[in-house]
Figure (cartoon, rainbow, N blue to C red):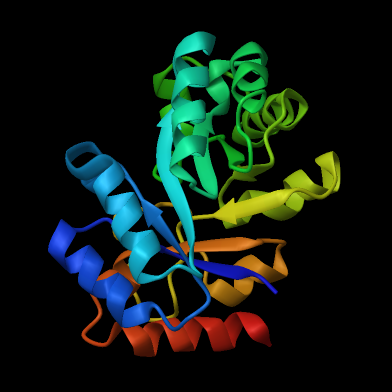
Amino acid sequence: MAKLCVALDTDYEKAINLVEELKEYPLIFKVGYKLFIPYGREVVETIKRISPKAELFLDLKLHDIPNTVRNGVRGASQLGVDYLTLHTLGGKEMIETAAGVKGNTNVLGVTLLTSHDGGYLEEIGVSLPKEEFILRLAKIGLEGGCDGLVCSAHEVEFLKERLGDFLAVVPGIRPAGFSKGDQKRVATPREAVERGADILVVGRPIVEAPNPKEVVEQILEEISK
């Protein structure tokens, strides 16, 4: 069964209260820049203490010279996080160097952000069709040692058909009736699972809900069918 990941892209107090509220559910909690930059180790350790059975996803999208990324991955592994993102645009050498020190942390390669579309590729001078560009980045990531890929629900089936099975982490998930926000490539939880998603990343529909438990239960029921 696919897993549900709650993106804690909110202020510290609200994030911790949400973890407390949702600790009974089988979830992954994702920490990004908004929490990790000001709170670092503190927020990671607090989440793990409140919800010890939950998995922790550190979403930093590392992209730098190989040695710098290696140091970042080693540090994340020492924190005991279960998942960590890096950009496949960093190239095979960077990814291989990172994978060599990841320990028990699953390294996830980011291809094209869900806020980007074909117009973005034109803007940066990439002439490849979007699907071919994503496929190349995905192949670099997996060959370099990534445990999985972060990709839109619209690319999961396409990538698995060409690259074989891998851990597919899919953001841009919007339950029926929720706004797309700034995401251009979105899908419902069920649509994403049917296309091959293994981890569904959901932020605002849960974080901003009057009753987060209700939304979590709705999604878990939807993806278990």
